Image (cartoon, rainbow, N blue to C red):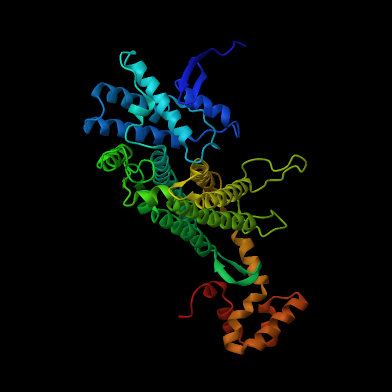
Length: 462
């Protein structure tokens, strides 16, 4: 294997060896040495957002007269390459780094500066701090990138995926609306319910999750940019934050604005915690839906078997013919991961010490992973499971007739105690409620059939 060739660069702490073909510089190389922790860098969505911030900043600084136009154009071109993912290999700092994300900010500054200098053919040296980071601090850039990357991913990926899932569940609710099955409470038989009603509940859960995500737009759309080191706006123009936010809005199609209070925006990560909480709630919903569907499809002969799930792969390496509800299991694992990510984000949110939070890279990584996982698994859930679900109408009817909860509709007519006695006798004898009631002659056959009609039990008394 060929040996890596190095060049020597310097930062304020001295000289560092940097790979010759790397666009990053001394500070990034130092961070690579300091944080050999996970082997994971911040995700693509975040790096894209960093490029968007630097792109908007370059144009804004040129407009305000602080940055020469040729340097601004070169920085903007390099930043656009970051946005487009063309320079991803040069973003090498571990997630678990300085809590402010300064190393990733400098990684971005150095990559853009060196690429911009290359674009200018070396005639003008673009400096990572003086030019690319002009009017900025890691302390306002990193939280800005957190909000931009997460809100853009929620708006463009997660909400559409959840709408896709909601619509698929709603379609099944309509398809199954005529099918009556047994309801269950406490895992025990309860009064009948229509399969469509059950699925309508799932669709509504997802719809509520979408509403909760839309509810976080206002806070996530506030950007810390313009606050610089501690929120006072030192070393930046008073219009800088507003103009950068406007440019980011134009580039993403998502509405952003400068934070009303920069001290809150930099010291607190409450909006990120709130967003994670909404993702957690969506995950709890998905866990319930996926587990219900797994139970309803359990069998094929010794379980509930009320619905038939698509067979998409063999389920066992030892039991021939076994097929498992693997998509539901994938959904529940994603839900568990997102719930775990939320716990870490919650702890991270508590680490806003005075004027700065110091767990931002971890929080950004977890939040974006949660959004990405939920976005993808919802689509898989629909395509590989929900759309192909069929109902076993005959099985649903058989279970209802065997249920002791059928006696519930007798109670208003013959009294609770008499209905309970019929249920106990039916259980002891292995008979159905209908059979015992008919034998006891509590109602005429015609009236009994009317009262014990399962479909009528799925509606309020008219």
